[in-house]
Length: 353
Image 1 (tube, rainbow, N blue to C red):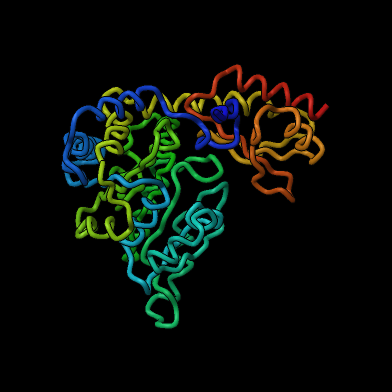
Image 2: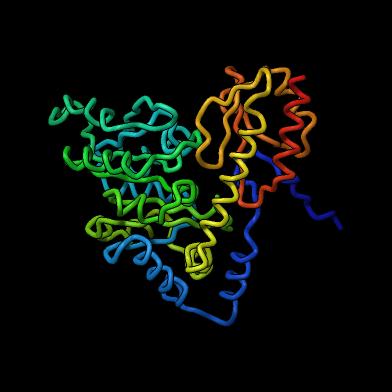
């Protein structure tokens, strides 16, 4: 009999590497008793529907899906037509990490705007206005921003509100890629809805997997009209789970009254802040972006990076963000501990010595 696979020790490569929070696993186990209706006709999905309205307002409508790529692509598909375009930050997840899924499945063009520390502002939308009405160009219809951003920064509510106002003034919509919305809300100490309904967003991708979930995120429409016929889009997009109660049970555990989402995100954020504070003054190391959520982006000499990769345990202790530039990413998770962080700080100091 072959030995069971052994996972890597806790590292800093990705918050996707972390395990599942025990309360989420317990919720799945509780949903695994007896039978329940399929395709969302179950008590757990009904409870998630209630939680969506509690967090995001009485008109909000939520749809569990299997992953964040599906949440983003189906949200974009619902908000656009094939001749239209999505404005996003250059380097955004939908731009470089979805394998072209928005272009293939939603059939839209992505228009890159140059970000500052991962964020774009209303001027990014105005740059495309001269092409409005020109049949030779895709028509901007949606602006998509990640909250928190790909580089660990956080849009303040006023910044998102300004984007929404600018978008609506140009007959556009605002999509928030909320794979790490929990981290952003925890960082700003605000409710989830404050960064969605509260800022005038139209649709969000609500992340769970990166914050202690097993599998499954959700699309949440804040403008109910956009949800029209979405159940058909979800089915065509191969995201209608037959045993949906197991997706919904996770979402209920995370976003229910106990606010497990906040506790998990707050720990990940706090560990990133601890890490940044511990390495910021090391000679030869530069923290290149403000550390506002659960990611630390650092530039080191290549020999020091190679020593760290060799000395730290696990196959992927961290990832390169920009290898030619010597830029690496350290991501903290819901289960990252102070001792994990302190060990990394000590290893970085030794590698730079």
